[in-house]
Length: 114
Image (cartoon, rainbow, N blue to C red; front, top):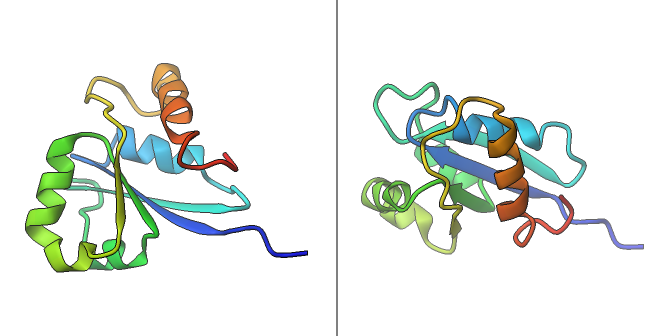
């Protein structure tokens, strides 16, 4: 019987305090997905690095501006990487139930084992 897939997921928002951190927590302890999160802004809780980009199989951003920033800062490192824009505005608090529901809904098509 073949092993089930294991994917490394990187979630990106601006400050890494609410949206991307909530997404990371949503996947804590999942058997098939390992999640990390980071932010694009100088004051982010954890600021995204080339190491994050290299580690990730799939990169999920919350807004198009995050993709633009990643392409500007890490252009070459993004070659061959899948970037998915979840289109989640910056209007939720950490672990907000509406945010959790929205993340589950938007991630379902990309993460079938969720």
